[in-house]
Structure formats: C-alpha cells, structure tokens
Length: 96
Image 1 (cartoon, helix red, strand yellow):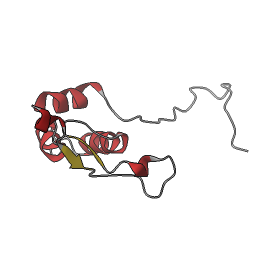
Image 2 (cartoon, rainbow, N blue to C red):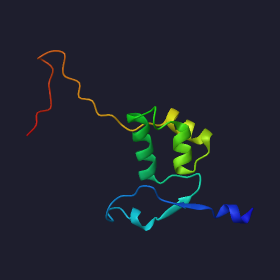
Image 3 (spheres, helix red, strand yellow):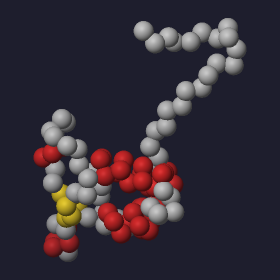
Image 4 (cartoon, rainbow, N blue to C red):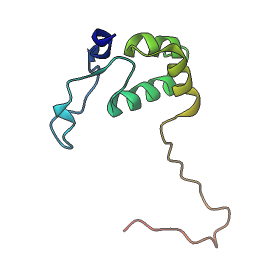
C-alpha cells in the first residue's frame, strides 16, 4: 500500500516563468490535477467536447473515470458576456 501512495506523474501543463510560485511544482499525485491542468482540461472539453471526453481526460491526466466525469459535469471555465442595454436610457459604463 505504501508504494501506491507515492505514485506521481509529471505535469502536462504549467505557467511560463515564475509569476505565482507555481513553477516549484513539477509533478502531482496520480488522480490529481494542478490548477493550470484543471483549467486547461476544462477549456479543452468546453471547446471540443467530442474530442476531450471525460474518458479521454481520465486517460490523459491519470484520473479516475468517475472523477473526470464529475469534473466535466460540475465545473466549467468562466464566460464573459457583454449584454447590450435594451434601451438607450440605460446607463452604461464608458471606456475612458
């Protein structure tokens, strides 16, 4: 059992440079994702769901298939949408 607690995998994605101290991390335990990997995986699934299925994510990142499925069902990257006002009277924040 002790030998399985130390199984780790190299990072698939990381931030360039050392802006936030993430560069100190070079590997993660199998079954876990770094923050950058999680965002990358979620974005890939969002953009190409037929290619980046939960099964493919599980295989690519050494995840349990049920965890990869839950990841794609319950988490998603943020979308920013600018909704135009319905009337001209609505106040808008102007770019300065």
